[in-house]
Amino acid sequence: MERGFFVVVDGIDGCGKSTVIKGIKDFLISLGINRNKIFITKEPSNSIFGHKIKEILRKQKNEYQNKELITELYLKDRKEHVKKEILPALKDSKIVLCDRYIYSTIAYQSAQGMSMEELIKQNEEFTKPNVVIILDIDPKDAIKRINLDKNRDKKELFEKEEFLKKVRENFLKLKALMEDENIIIIDGSKPKEDVIKEVKNILEKSLLE
Ligand code: TYD
Image (tube, rainbow, N blue to C red; front, side, top):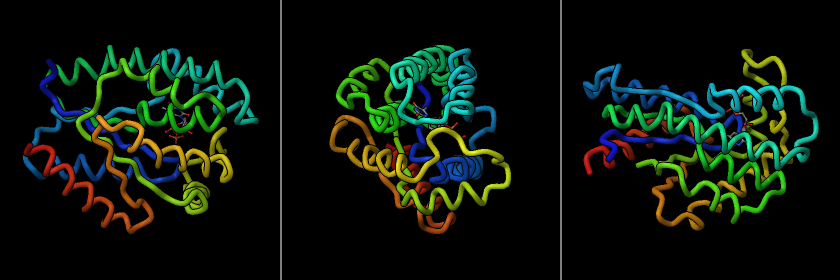
């Protein structure tokens, strides 16, 4: 049995996941939770499969190509990430904050043309989070944010408005398709402070349950 608490933040590129994760971390610290009890991580992870994925994301131009290989790599990366990082942290009673998880595979790889039903099945084996926050935003605004971000020099494979529209639609279907999961969809287009406040309220409730 894991004793920790597992939170996932997911959504399309440019939805504000990293800002929200930082906001959650600051909130947990303000509650008196020790920094070394908070483990922040992301997918694609640092495994060899994660590195292969990042190379494809930089080099490949067409977002519909290699969908089988890409799906396989995300699943293999997740297997390593869960086994070597997430589960040990949860066993150590840590709060795990994960940027992207199974929801990204289901939303992005079905936008690439894989079967959504099949992707849901392929992800059943993975530990379920206590809370899943999906930040919902119009891909137009997301692309604007990506373009404003000075730390990004080049656009990645999936950072295209038309493609992200499909991904967004898929994310919005997940709540109904995965009824046994604690998925909460938040309007990510609101000011940063409002989004973080909403997330804090959700976490406060679920941490006390
Ligand atoms: P990410 O590292 O979050 O992007 P960023 O460059 O903003 O840090 O994710 C890289 C890309 O991988 C992103 O476009 C989403 C995509 N992705 C999938 O298609 N499937 C998945 O299972 C995951 C985890 C990510």
